[in-house]
Length: 275
Image 1: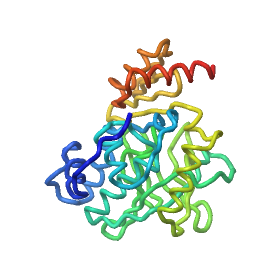
Image 2: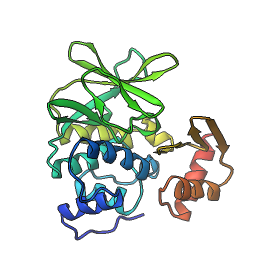
Image 3: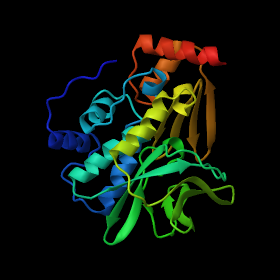
Image 4: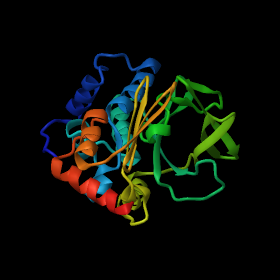
């Protein structure tokens, strides 16, 4: 699917984004920061569709706006948080860019393949992450070490060693580290390197797996290859995907990711061949 060319100015793109989320004409206060994260992850799907299809995925703001907001293709951290960073920058929140290592509570040292933002509001720093999929927070998470309640989840940022911060979620009676990061200086060139690995390297997760999710207020919808899950406080419903049309319907109708019939057939064929 080729992106449409936009003639909109950046300020017009920002206003269109805010209009879709119902946040135009709002005061840029802390409630606004809460709402922009919550509505973003409930509207624009975390998605590796572009990675699976081998598409070019440029990270400039206009390309991200077209891909995520206009063409509804979703995206993963370098895309979703790249778009959000530009929105926050335009709204004068002065976001700071950082890169993180995804560890899932393990003592490992993977590459810097996750992008996040930190915003300072009234003297307090908060992590904003609209690009970690079904496990990610739907709220700003305080950098103070205090717990941040996100519905049925509790997040915190723990400085586990000097200058090393872990985003943690409370899980099975203890806090579980999702990723770790340092407050070092990063730029767009660093993002390009991590992004290139994540959507081009033959061993990268998103190259090898179809991962799509929407984090909504009452439920999380999550697709991993050919298994679809709907997660609520009362439990998890699982569904095996049996054909390409079922896969396409879930992507389009349940997850809001627009794919063509030909793309649906290709995705299903490639995933089936991996089983």
